[in-house]
Length: 231
Image (cartoon, rainbow, N blue to C red; front, side, top):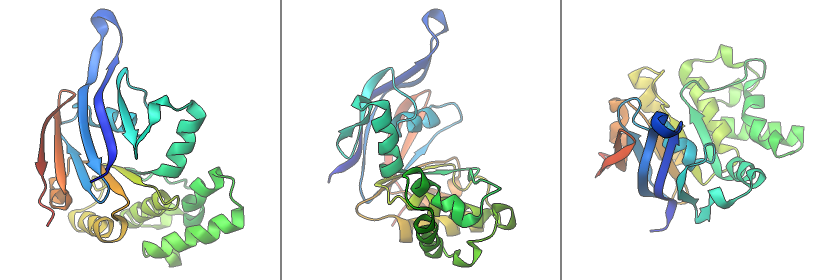
């Protein structure tokens, strides 16, 4: 099976000398297309730092990470930005929606950043809102939506670039149990494909059943990778 992500000896520290603190230590793993991989562990274990290195946000001090066989840290800064815009979709715990924009305008942001025509971008955004079941909310501001609806807007925005890799950082932490499970049902049944890899950082054991595999981290290291409960 072809890996979507191949990380080798990724290491990140902050500070120097006696003040050096390791956030991630020599982490190596692979994640595959068609897979939902959870990264779990206590706060401060290095999960978010690892995500930042994988997604091209934070440069590692040593080690490599390849996304679909592209060693991203050998790219120029402009190439990394373009790679992230086209290949990686992000969904955050707090949604990161712009309150002064409509729902459709929020979803269209990645297309606007690609310098796509405004009207075409809004039309395409409406299509992705329909996919997540929010076509009738396209003209509303985020404040008029429930938490679950705002998370689906964030999903639509992440999908609009048709990324190979989708990264979720605590996607259900702000949601009640039923809403969180509905979001994860949608992710599993409508977003995961054999040409897409989904990486999820979470503390929420209510959604562990959706993982194909679970990678556990402690003190910046991988302490175990196990099969999930996803049937």
